[in-house]
Image (tube, rainbow, N blue to C red):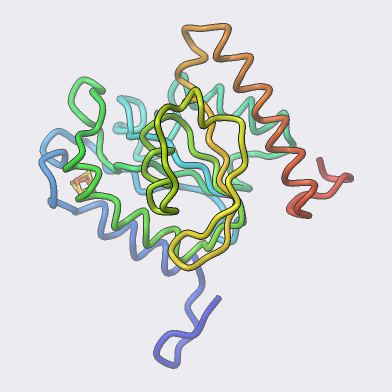
Length: 210
Ligand code: URA
Ligand code: SF4
């Protein structure tokens, strides 16, 4: 909750306002191919934010992030560390589905990320998990930290500041990578255990609830 122009606006109100703009956004060409834009879902008061890349086909149909096969695996990873998707906030770097699930282009990321920045400003997360190279590259760049590859960046905690807030950033692989490789699946499971340890250490979860 915070005061704006004499009114108290909840995070939910503020995030709903961002979502309403995303739903009708035509700022880059990706709106042309979308069925539904995918602003993000979850607990507006969460201290924990997960950022993926861009919606795929299932997400585009439903208007919700991570509801396809990669999303099922993300749900399983969350559940292993004591969370459901309703406890955390989940969004993407780019809010509309790129054609044939291609990677988002730099100009699309640049045009869309003001929405993500606003979401971060509202939620003021204490812990951000970046899923895959696009969200990791973007968030580390906001923290003025170098990024060369997700393989090198993953599994580490970057204590930093983003948009004026102190935050820990934890990059890991994209959950879709686990769908075709047991190696990535195992790394993701290990990384989520490290996330759990970090959250316990920071008092963001408690031993009884984890
Ligand atoms: N992959 C992503 O990066 N985001 C989604 O929402 C779904 C799949
Ligand atoms: Fe707007 Fe982002 Fe969708 Fe492009 S991807 S149309 S910038 S919401």
